[in-house]
Image (cartoon, rainbow, N blue to C red; front, side, top):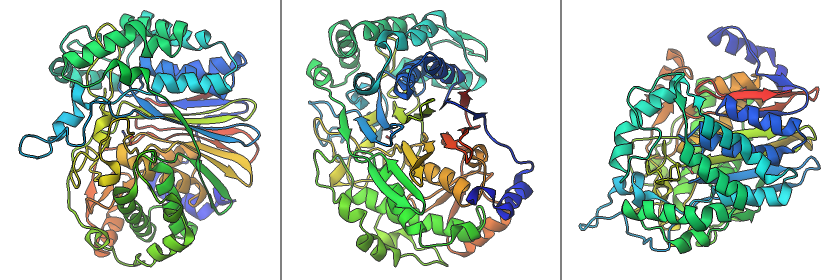
Amino acid sequence: MAESRPEQIDHFKERYGIRYQGLVADEAMVVSAMAYASRVGVQVMQQGGNAVDAAVAVHFALAVVYPVAGNLGGGGFAVYRTSEGAVHTLDFRETAPEQSTRDMYLNANGKAEPGWSRNGALAVGVPGSVDGMVRLHERFGTQDWASLLAPAITMAEDGFPITALQAERLRDVQDDLLTYNTHDRIPLLGIGWHSGDTLRQPDLARTLRSIQQYKRAGFYEGENLQRLIRSVQAAGGLLTPNDLRSYQSVWREPIQFDYGAYRFYSMGLPSSGGILLAQMLYHLSHFPLAGMGWNTDRYLHLLTEVERLAYADRAKYLGDPDFVAVPVDTLLSAAYLDERLTLIDTQRATPSEAIEAGTIEWQESEETTHFSIVDPAGNAIAITTTLNSRYGSKVMVEGGGYFLNNEMDDFSIQPGVPNQFGLIGGEANAIAPGKRMLSSMTPTIIEKEGDLYMVVGSPGGSKIITSVLQAFLNVTAHGLSLQEAVNAGRVHHQWQPDILYFEDTALDSLTMAQLTARGHTLRERSPYGAVDAIRILPNGQLEGGADFRGDDAAMGW
Ligand code: GLY
């Protein structure tokens, strides 16, 4: 078993000391960004609910206890595998408003104004999360809908004590809340938030009650619709009642591929996650990674080169498949990938300009949230959902108590102009009314020899895909426990800018020197991503991996 390769374990131990494992449970588990939300999911399953019931309850709980990314006003993707092995993926990604135009973020001089797509009401796409939860529950849920929203409503009404990290983020966002709203009915407003302070959200509780009572109509019709449109239009946004009423989630085919003994099911377009994961692992399958050692220069060089190739394809070809023809079969074909493989120099970095043109820099914010659930019957669900940036557009619906996304920034607002993640795109990801913006969200379920093996995903903007990749490889190629795998320092390359980013725990000084000698430009950056995953151990128990970069928590029994 790759899991017990002693030399890799020693290598890790040498660098980081004693080994450790995540929570181990026998029956069921939830791993999410907040303990309150994980607990809600566990309780739903203990009362007889399945993984989808738990997911619905966790999603609405996160909308309350994790307002930075948990949401009613955003969108996301779900990958669901039944205990019999059937896999279903749901796309509840936001769409561009009907009044949006291709050049809506260009100023009078034809120059892109990235601020317009990142903050304020003009950045808001049509939210998909509530419709997504309703669709999931209608098809696979077993418990009473109202009961699944009850814990979230209670936490919104009674309040909950915030963590130190939440207090810091709340302090940071104060100016933006005032700048991008035309009202001050925002419970997050306040000076001097501290760990342990209680956050109560009565308006959010009312919106949740409306969804509890009327399901989809409680959000996309009636009072909530009026409030949402009023707030967006007052702040200069484009959403119309028809945008809300016509929003529909879409069941899509998963991206399915094999890597050795593992079969992957991940999200297809409009997320780039599954396609890039498949491309990168196809290329990596040609190299003996396990013998290279964890985060050695030889290993990281290869990782970088396959990431460079995949992200170059992302920029050129990928977009909403309902609007543009994307050659997915070709991009995933052995013939195409074998040809791309010849571009990899196994010794030296290939400059990204030699792959495709362009040089860019970016400022980033990477708030999204992911949760993984396995229920006692063995059904598993991976959901990644987002407002895009931290607190999304920063626009809160007056009287509704929830933030609206700034997902429009995930479109290519002008060819060659980077979004907040530094991703550039072209025609395939240009804005059009009703179109979904390209995503990097990568909720993924992995089988090993036909059995459920791992449920995984992460926030992190463009770095989501490489975070998921490294979490998987850390376990399967390097023998780390799942908890070690998600905590381990990460690296990231996305073709442009031609920089290999690393967290400080990812590289030692020797490896840095070796990578530089191979021609890589290195840059340290602050910790990113939050991989929340579950692995099925060889004895059938579940191991949780709750990322230590945030307040993430695994719970189970
Ligand atoms: N908003 C981040 C993503 O969808 O990739």
